[in-house]
Length: 166
Image 1 (cartoon, rainbow, N blue to C red):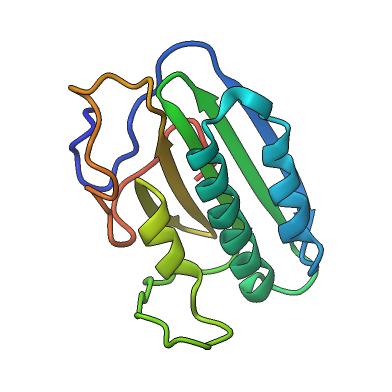
Image 2 (image 1 turned 30 degrees about the horizontal axis):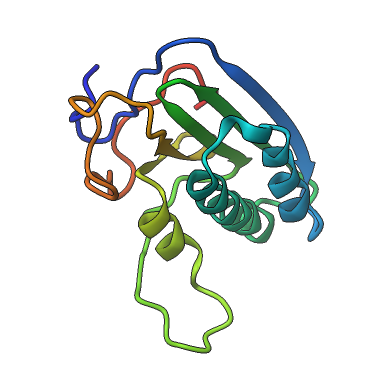
């Protein structure tokens, strides 16, 4: 798999740190998910840490809002020399993402807009559950392999992500 393939996450290289966290469908879950990123410590450059915390918070908030009552949400993080991969998995049917430019002062509807603007790549995979995944490139990545920031979006449901429970 190459980095330019539409709808497919990139392969990682080097040692990995993996974390899987099961969260309840509860308003406290986005905060717990953000704090899970704190465990990566100095492994993430400040820019990637800041962007990934916002994205994780938005994805878990969306899952809390849309997952069936009583279901759990799974946050999966994988850090390697190539970058940070994030997946939020929830039970429920597949959906087509709708990204609109939110109005200033609008209180909701920012989730996928922020994901689209802050993650380097993202997509959605669905069957009996929905996995929204995203990737953040690390500066140590080879320039020949790196895409420009926000240079490639899946725009929706294409692709698969081996290594995560999609």
